[in-house]
Length: 256
Ligand SMILES: [Zn+2]
Picture 1: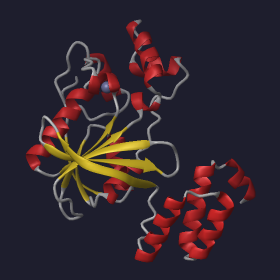
Picture 2 (picture 1 turned 90 degrees about the vertical axis):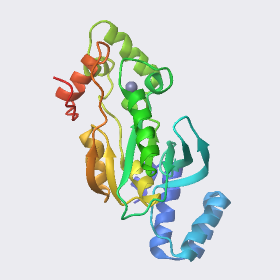
Picture 3 (picture 1 turned 120 degrees about the horizontal axis):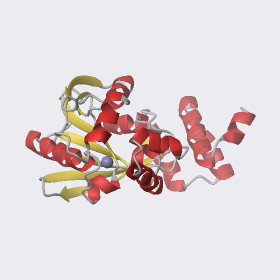
């Protein structure tokens, strides 16, 4: 235990000990811990209140803010979540009365600054995000978890470096490998926790990525349908989409 705890960050230790506290069910243990470790008092109080209410969901994310968000597609709610085990943050767009038994349109959208914000034609991320928002608006019910892991987790600067290599002919996988980076560093567990926190139980997944669909199943959600979210390849996206289909196993029917 001692060797393990030395490898943990302080934040991870907090979560570990708070989880231990929950399993032991002893609030005085947490108070003692707080004095020793200088845990944020607000956090301590919230966990104590959860204990009193009997909320033992044991999530590793927390919702820290929520507001209304009118958009070009319609009225949505926007929520901010924080990971309790890392510095990762998540933005969630949602709409309607979500209930576990109601099949709910969901998308885990991985941040793509170039596509989502600048309208890049190198990938289909921007149109996918817009289509997901439109579908949720039409349905009146749904969730988009916006995972801020740019470039499948390598970060925006490395993504631009990878684009430079792609300018010289590399595909999206070769470019990452030549930079000594993983092809896909993303983890979806906490995105799935967020869906559960929002009361989602049965999902209609808007995704072409089998790993995201599997992550939802593994996390305990019932996948009732996959809703394809696909666009005709253009001269700019053809190579990228072909690599996604034939080397990364994405479910793309319009790519030959
Ligand atoms: Zn993109």
